[in-house]
Length: 258
Image (cartoon, rainbow, N blue to C red):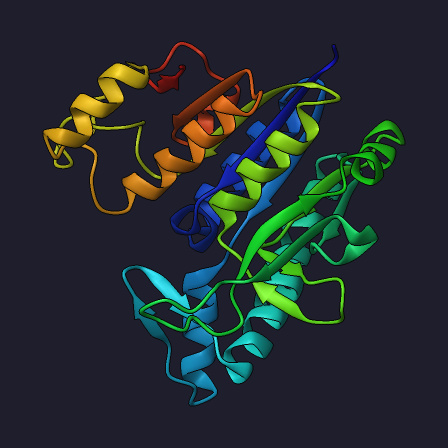
């Protein structure tokens, strides 16, 4: 099976011009077929504030009303996505910016209302692996923003970590998929205050222990839940680290396995 690298880049890197430029250079040097996934939540919050639209976050998740969805569509699908695509073109990568609505690539359904109504937030239900593969085989590099659709004309704000995980699962039927989560830290840390306290290998057993000890907590919990969901569904490897991890294997990073 041919290898495919799926790389999700975190918001703090997107917001830092120098860090983003450095990451995109690393990404451009990554050998073989590849896909990039990004969000843009901090930029969306900033633009929404300028427009007088208040951002409502609950447990780190954005409540997305109709006005907020318009901002997210403009920022994720336009401003952030097209700037990344343009920078990749300058690095000789034939990038193609996409939402989940393009070529019906990622379909989702509105998140069910339990205790909280998150509004226009989608949970992924289907990935069009064959359609995405046509782009990859034509030597395009897809760049997905964190927007999906319901196949009935409605766009949804969707967690970018989840999009990366679901793309990896869907495409693992056609490729040997390696999934990378790149953010500002060097990996999963034993101590948040110590950037060198990287836990280099985590399996299902140590994952459970680290959760019980409270070492894996807060924002890292949903990220690792996405990782293990992907691993149980056919993804070959998941790596978490800073943006240079995709090209520099001499540094510390976290590798997850079952």
